[in-house]
Length: 311
Image (cartoon, rainbow, N blue to C red; front, side, top):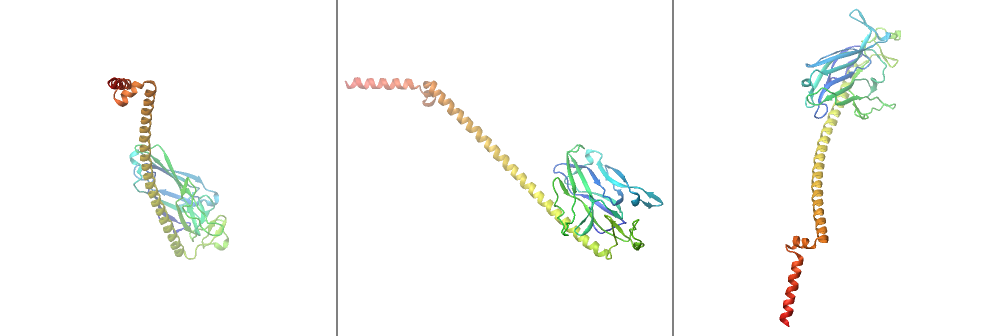
């Protein structure tokens, strides 16, 4: 998400879903966003050549609100973007950014999509990225950008990328309690001052929102730098892996040739051995270019002549 920090509970904000890459050699054909509970409305941009489908969930009575004179009883649950044709899919080498306007609510009680992380109130935007081969829309691979984090009991924060496969780091936004909220059922002492409900606890607005925004921004920048470093390292590892694959293929080819040659030599020696056993004359003819029997006869005749001369 970009930007992904400095948002006030109860207010509107706009953020772009940034898709810097997909599966190597494939094309992004659809994205499915699981809208965090606590987001009250979403108005997504629809890229050219794509369509968009929003499904809603029913809001509990204590989370329903008035907007432009009408009672709002639902909130977005999922947003699905799909390429209309294979030509509209996005190559792995291209950047896709989709702007969405959100409205933050004032109640947050879903542990799957909200947590305290790096000391900040955090909403997690789980996304499935589906990819297809060139010229098709059939889903062949899926990236699960659904790994969330939360602070440990001792206050320490796990790294953003510390997720368990196949889950990968989840997009997120930092936000803070603000005066824009007026939660139904909050203590009377909070009237007029704004209050946010966080897992059943009522939290007053931040006294220094500018400082909170600065801290959240610094954290988001650090996380973005970490992600880019991890991606660069992944690219290098993939390049090394490709090199290893090429070396392995060459080694297999050389070994295969050597095996064939050794088998051929073995067959030749085996044939010579069989010929030596079963056809000595043929073996001699093959090796010495003349039959061994004729050679022996010539030798015997020569020796007989020598004996006769001596006599």
